View 1 (tube, helix red, strand yellow):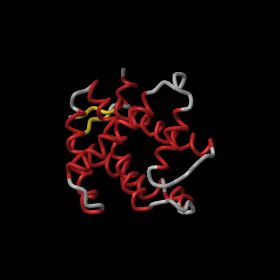
View 2: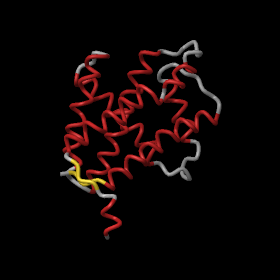
View 3: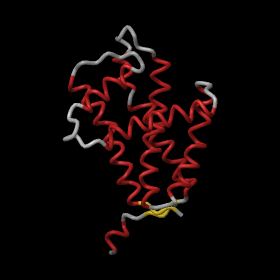
View 4: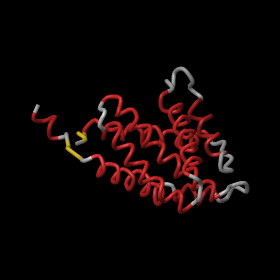
Amino acid sequence: MVFANLFKTKVEAQVLARDLFQAWVMDDFERAYHNEIREWRNDDKFDESKCEYILFTYLISLVAVALTSASEKERKFASVARYFREHALSPVTKGWNPSEEIFDQAVEKASNNLARLVFTNPSENPALSFEWSREWLASFGVREHDPIRLYKTAFRWKNSYIHLCHLFNKLRVI
């Protein structure tokens, strides 16, 4: 019991939301995809502005999907989701100018798409990782056919979701 408590951390909902936004959205947006964006620029149909908006939306959606899963187990994560939305809305409306309603719709669509990737059993649809990645990349003009790159893209999203779920299992929201 003592060993398990070493990994439990009490955290305020508002603080967790702020930290999640910084670590899982802003930091990933600024650093994690830098090399990929540089490579994607070589594709003649690549739309960098659209890529940035979609990437930002999907990073927010990733956290939202994980928070939704966590709130099914622990209701206090729902308050984290509300605070997280507030953090996410400000940079989007400043950077890309969508209305709040349009942004909410984009996050919902991205969340549903990510959930399809994360929650589909690979044995039921083994090609989903490739299909999903190909569609996601095509949404901002990247044509990718290399199965390793396609798998790596899907794996990154799935792995991030798993890490968030593990983190949430170790936290107690107060």
